[in-house]
Length: 435
Image (cartoon, rainbow, N blue to C red; front, top):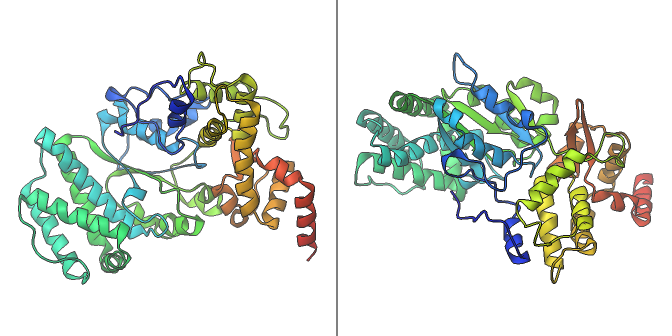
């Protein structure tokens, strides 16, 4: 658990801390929901992955979980890992891939190794409290396997470690895991070794999984967060080109995957896919409508973090902040934070929210190309997606957002309207398109 204090803010400084956009909401002791957590209007969709995990199975399943950046995937993964029903059936191993790998250079072999390392490490840590340790035969086998790896890696420090066998194996796992993230040369050497014998790596994962089940009488459940960060081509290489290998571990796994891959035709090659939609604020084809449920959900998210009675933000400012968030929780947190930074004293006013939104707009102004702006104008007009290769970057940067109300549709980030309508920008795009 992190050390974040989940208490309602009564001043802008405390509110600033409460709207940190990159901290997912961890459940409290006993699996109780985080006090900042807000039930989604589409709670049934959010719970669909849990329901699927609790279904009976002949063999451990693999699930693929996606959604736009900032929509709440990490929070939902934390909830799964602490859910009492899930804990009755599974022994969860939850981690973020970015803590163990270079997210800009991650390979399927890195992921498989980290799955094995985390299964071992987290169970070993737990066994110190429970006393149910992995048996020495398995530990000796893992030590032999690791010795084979290190003999083939010229850049890793050699020499046998001393101490208890389990601790020794754990130390070697930790050393190689750290090297995968921080040392490109060792990372590449490890990949070459695994390339020759990826079956051996899978066998290690499966032996650890089997040993955990034998002791706990619960199936290992691996929940891997932040695998949605690699770009479309990297995601295709991992989950499509190497799909057969990624399905082979004999433990249940939830892989997060990037939203651009979810829109690519290749997604049909994956089973058990789940997408967490954004909060709908208006109907398709009519941005002037207002979804009362969507606004209520987002406003509740704000008032769970800052006291309504303290009058830290006025109603008009909050309404605009919600509208400009597009129903994305992280975007709303970022706008509130930016508004707090613009306000000398409470309450946050309309002009403070406008300044925060303008900062978002400037970021898009600097990064969007003329061709991308034209695509965004088309999407705004018909709420339809375009070619997956054209959409990759726009989806990753949240310039395009998906919604659902019986049918799937999309729209542009609300902060982009003024940019696309700006006369100077339109002239520049017209000139660019005439070349």
